[in-house]
Length: 134
Image (cartoon, rainbow, N blue to C red):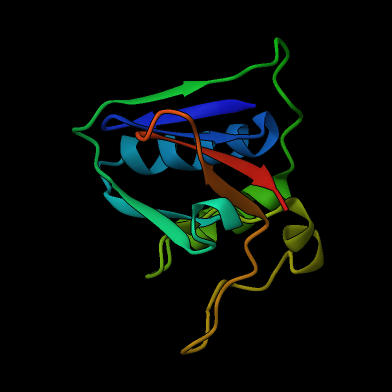
């Protein structure tokens, strides 16, 4: 389980999704673009959604638990990039969605909740959250 720390908030993700999110996030921030990052909360954290507005001026820290970088799936990366460039922002979704819809742009209908595969629950420190695969 790796982590992303941003403005005193830590969110833990599996190393595999974190590696994909890191690439997309760094691409956006290198271009000076601000955007929204969203993920789904686990039942223990209220079963809702959490979001963070990412801005290039605020320090961001990625920490991976594994010693080897995971293999990058270009289809998943493309799906996450389309999401990041949409009006809803980057939504942390599972790899299965990218494999099922590789060429479909992310365009949620009004009232539609995206199929988010990773969830977040409160960690012991109130400033931390943990994302787990649902």
